[in-house]
Amino acid sequence: MIEFQQVNKKYDDGFQALTDINLTIKKGELTAFIGPSGCGKSTTMKHINRLISPTSGRIFIDGKDISEYHPVELRRNIGYVIQNVGLFPHMTIAKNIAIVPQMKNWDKAKIDARVTELLKLVNLDPDTYRDRYPSELSGGQQQRVGVARALAADPDIILMDEPFSALDPITREQLQEELVRLQEDVHKTIVFVTHDMDEAIKIADTIVLMKDGQIVQSGSPEAILRRP
Ligand code: ADP
Ligand code: ADP
Picture 1 (cartoon, rainbow, N blue to C red):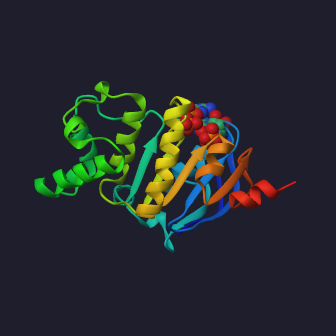
Picture 2: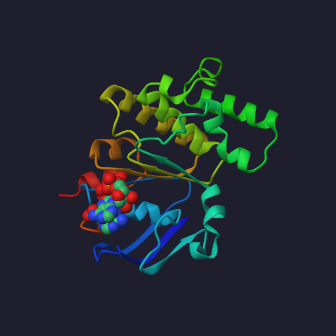
């Protein structure tokens, strides 16, 4: 469980990006943050892996204040998928996926098996893709690798910041459906940022609506849709 208590964020230039964020993100659920560009979705999410620290307020993961974790320790347990994937261009797909397992000193056989398993999970044929380079893959395929990489060392939490928004509509829809299936399989706590209500409704267990740095409403997709 992830909890925000009275979190405020003022950036160095004085801009108040978040005001009084109180929020509980349930374990094993997919929570989608939605709202117009600039409303503070990414800022909220980046607090969870301490890419950003609050100006005031506290954030807890499983009851422990995240300021008590070393950021590296914290991030090893939190997968992060972003819009432009950020695969390393000089590394093969297999090497890209294996970054965190390698940091954790897994042996080679275990890493190889994990890479194969993950490529299958995101619907990429392991024999075809493991030794290719990112530039040889389409945007949608690279995004699949991004998801595989985020899952590699079996983190408890996965953060996804508009991971599909740069993709064509068909690929995007396909990946949305796969994410729902994946979520049912691996049952991770997933925090997903989007500005697309259809996407949020399709994939989320809980939707958090934001506007101007504040939470306007949160609840199940059904509850959000029922709102007059
Ligand atoms: P969203 O993800 O909803 O599009 P962000 O969380 O990225 O919004 O940004 C929220 C607001 O904070 C925006 O107005 C943005 O310009 C501002 N902002 C984001 N990062 C910084 C920063 N490093 N310094 C100052 N302002 C920032
Ligand atoms: P996103 O909305 O996906 O977070 P942006 O394109 O808004 O990405 O921001 C890209 C980077 O620029 C982020 O690191 C963000 O913190 C920073 N940034 C965004 N808005 C501002 C701003 N007004 N002043 C300074 N940095 C900003």
